[in-house]
Structures are given as structure tokens and as C-alpha cells.
Image 1 (cartoon, helix red, strand yellow):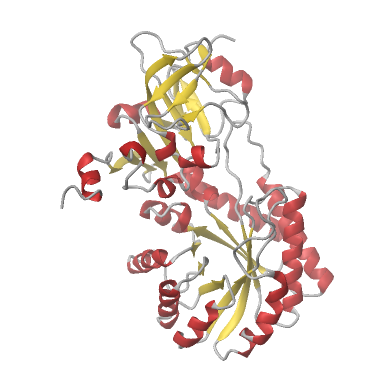
Image 2 (tube, rainbow, N blue to C red):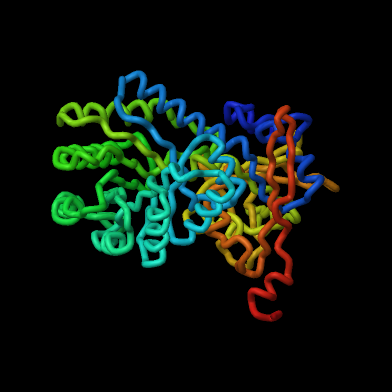
Length: 464
């Protein structure tokens, strides 16, 4: 094993559905990355839109298969949670697949209004309104309901939120209740700060919602921070939640839907082997079995997938701009960007993304540390999901090495503060949208240029 290509082929099952190499250069979903780099340069964010639709269709197809297999009587609805990526091109690509939306704050609601004005959604689109609701958020929700968005469903995060709605909504409306799930045993606290305690749900329904002349309870919602995983913890929380649905359904005939929040994992390594089909089949089966045991109809199922929807569509491409051997063992490749500012989950959560060289695959490989441009000691990347080391091709004289962090399409721009001020004033990189035309040909366009110093000066108050 001599070359970087040998290393990857012998370590992983390679090529994959998404990645292949030709003439020592990487293709991502059949996109020749070196051609994109040569046109636009680095650092660069990429969004490959067709991957969004592909993942949505996969989930919808697998739920339909499980529902048919088990003769499940409820329906399945796919919601995209906009907080994962609010960009218009992301949301509009997702909406091409006959899906619905989930919001998190008052600032989502003007986006929903604009999508309606553009004809991307209509008043029958389901809008699941999650999050703690301050007055402005509740005001937007009330306005939507009064304007005829009959499937705008405020999910009550606490028992006080219904008071504003009762005063300001003039039509019959549906609500959900978020149930406060127990966190994983190793979490910092036992029960989620979000939602209504299990012991309070039924009394709250009996004393408040059932006595309303306008509100009806449509949905129960819960959210698992760690996502949908085949663990004892996940199945235990799901069972407890479905039992709450069954108990409440017996006294609340209008209740007919559960929202199982917490999404599917995405690939953070070429070793990824998550079985989506098995998990979906078991979710449908377990919900049905519990409902039959309790003698209640199966509920409709809503999921709200964020990272699963958009994460694998994204990539962040860097150039290696220098090498530094700091002692006998630690070789640094310095990149023309920053992990802290451009991929903040690397720093904040120790998140691992799928990392591959873009070119020079025929070169020998070596162990390296990747260093970002900020002065912060934490601005580095030195391990992957499958190993505690990072390997990349050696750089020969006169060569430039490009490397990519893949599946970075969810949360990174919003957490990093797109268009804002970053640590050490590292600019937001340019962003390229890649798509395919009706004939399947690759198209690309510049969505945003690299942030310039003038915009930073304006934000900081040096120019007015």
C-alpha cells in the first residue's frame, strides 16, 4: 500500500454511491470537483441540490413500504425542519417533493409567508410550529390561522402558550403538545427543558384544551436529541411516548397524529452502515403493536428531518496553503479557512465529517493535522469518525492539494453566523449551488461571493 488511493480502497468499500476517483481526482455525486475548484477557487461551500430530493424520496418510499407491509392504517408525512438550513434554494428544493415544514421561531414565519406568495406552498401545507413561543411568534401563528392556514399547528411547549392563542385566534384551530422526553443517561440533566411533563399532559388536556370552544388537540410531539438509533434508550422513549398517545386517545377522539422528532443520522464516514429500512419498519411495527394492545387506532406519523434532508448535499472545499513540522511527529497542513468559523460543529461538538482529498490521489500518503487560520488553539482537525488520525496525500514540489469536508450541509452556516462577524474576522467563504438540468447535465452558479472587508467594516460600525 503506497498511494493515498491504495489507502482509501483498502480501508473502505470504495468507490461508493457518492464518491469515485478518476485520474487521481475526486468526483462527488458525479460532479468533477476539480473543475468547480478551477472555476471558482477556494475556500468554497457547495450545495448539491439533487441529493436533497434523493434523501426525501428514500424516506418516503421506505415509510410507504413499511406501512403497506404491516397494513398500517395511519398516513406518513415528511416535514423539513427549516432550522437545519434556511436558504431559499434548500427549502424550495425540498418542497418539490410534496413535503411539509416545521418552524422553530418567529423569524421562520416571514419565510413561510414568502414561500406562500411565491406559490411554493399553499394554505393546506402543514406547518408544525415548534419552539418556545414568545409573543411575536404566537402573533404570527394567530395571523396565519385567522388567514386560513388551517394546517398551521402550534405545538405547545408549555401550558401557558395556549392563552395567547385563545385570545387572538378567531377560528377553530388545532394544537399539538410537546412531551418532555427523558434525556440519555449520560446527559447533563434527566429531562428535556422543552415540552410539557408526562404527568401534566392529560390534566392539561382535560382542564384546558377540552374546555376550549376553538382549540382541539391534533398531535402529540416528542424529540430525541440523539436521533433515531437502534438503542435501548430510543425504543424505551418511543414506547413511553406511544403509550401516552394511547392513554390520551381514549379520552380525546380528535387526537390522531404523533410527531416523532429527532432525525436519521447521516454519513460521517465511509464506514457508515445505518439500516434506514430496518429502523423505519420497526418504528411502524412497534407503534402499531402498542396501539392494538391498547385498543386504539394507529396514529398518522410525522417526522421532521433536518440533517438527513440537507446534510449530505453539502461540502466545504479547502486548499492546503502551507506545511509546518512543529516537532518530530506533528506535521500540520494549514488550510485557507477555519474549522471554528466555517464548520463550528467541529469545534463545539467535536463533530466528525467525511473528509477526503480532492486531488493527488496517486501520491503517497502521510499522517497530518489540519490547522485553520484563526489564532485559536482549538482550530484544528486531527481525527476522523473511524480513526483517531487523519491521512492525506503528500504534497510534492509545485503541487497544490485540495481537500474536502463532506456532508456539511446542515447547521454550519446558521451556527457560524452566515454573513456576520467571525473569530479573527475570517470571512464567510463563497457558496456554489450545483444542480442538474432536465437532461441531467450538471449546472452550477455562484450564490454568494466570499465576504469582503467592507461588509465587515459596516457591521462593526466603521462605515455608515
